[in-house]
Length: 43
Image 1 (tube, rainbow, N blue to C red):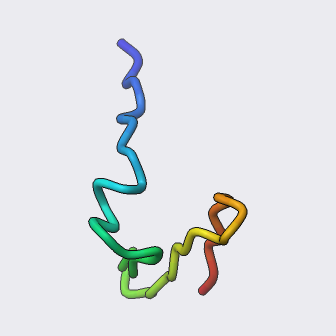
Image 2 (tube, rainbow, N blue to C red):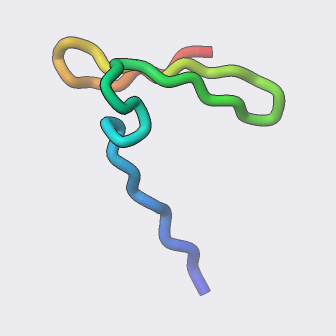
């Protein structure tokens, strides 16, 4: 059986902001939305 990826709107994660910080296996990542509406993930 295949796992179907969950779809989560960025706006629901970021609430009113333009960025969120994500921790994965001890590493911190920043996911931010640009003025053009694109997402950029940086370490």
